[in-house]
Image (cartoon, rainbow, N blue to C red):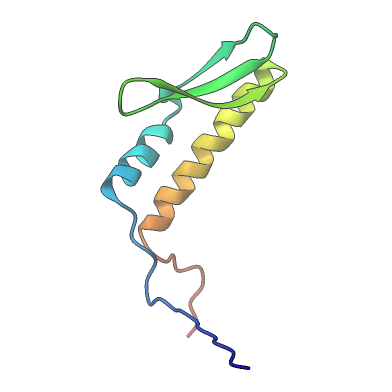
Length: 94
């Protein structure tokens, strides 16, 4: 019996395409989001796409829950953009 085992390692982070970066920058701004009320009473969060359309993201029972979801998404994409800048020094030693 032959077992094949392979590992991979990278010396840097995988590169993100320019299109993906532009989308992340776009959705990291709260002004590109909206909340709509659906016929069933739920609230749907949507973000404006780069193609000038609205894309649905989440559904929540309350408008407060929908706004919290938007705030969390904006924070999530802002962090992703921050990580693209490279490693952050958190502590140094002498």
